[in-house]
Length: 180
Length: 180
DNA sequence: TTATTATGAATGAACG
DNA sequence: CGTTCATTCATAATAA
Image (cartoon, rainbow over all chains, first blue to last red; front, side, top):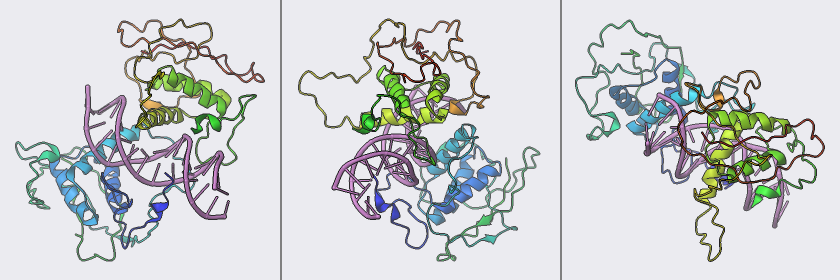
């Protein structure tokens, strides 16, 4: 199992990390980055809409489904509690991809985030939402998430690494964070 | 096959086999011995308490953390199952697997085991349990696991290999196994 | 040394 | 939501 194929690196951007048969979702560095940021920003249990939204944007970095986002948050939240301690290893920081194409560009103005759910009435649950086509959703459908004085955390200035190759294709990703 | 191999001779005791800078936990022969015994005794998925307990005792043989125990069982269970592929014992096969390990035997004097969880109310999960100091747990804290006759498996008489050198320092390890 | 194996650690996916 | 399973990744140990 020593598989040295690990070396198989992504061609241009860190797409599929594992060259093996991807039976399951394999998040790219960018995707993880965004998800982590969202999580650190306070997002714990994204609504169906938020999941759809996030998934849509992350699809720019690679194949991804809504359920992946759903699971990601579920797992991350559940495990955070069990993982409060030190994280082994000296060099285990991040990005094991080997490709450092993280054009550190700051998007202060445009912070990435989740769109408020503002769940409209009744809708199918989770990702099983009939899978209507592939993207019918809009980026900013919400018109009034209402005020809410609940948790309004502001985003932390974070960088956004984008593939320098498809700069034109991937959306700017400047979403607004507005927790329900 | 490895399992026992690297364990080397139990003739004495293999101190911290870890050659040096252990990036990751490297179990000693004794630790593996105990874990293996517990596993073969039927323990598959130790509870948080059991993990803590086991970890505490195994620490006598070397550095170890609760999460190591947790992972060990996870891996061991998963792998044994996976390795059961294409292995049809023609004849008298011990067929030790399965869940029938009900050797309801007497907990003879020195049986190694895990202490019942007796999960009292709410407790942190897994090995993340606050890491309260270094063992506040008692060997037989339970006074009444209360009703619930879930799975009460008894231990199979097994010997306990102990380092003859540190007999005094390491706990006798005569615990009782009582699944919940 | 390099190649392979054994296994610790991590996490996606799901179960109950 | 907590817990468990299945795969995969990473690396110490060991064979070649």
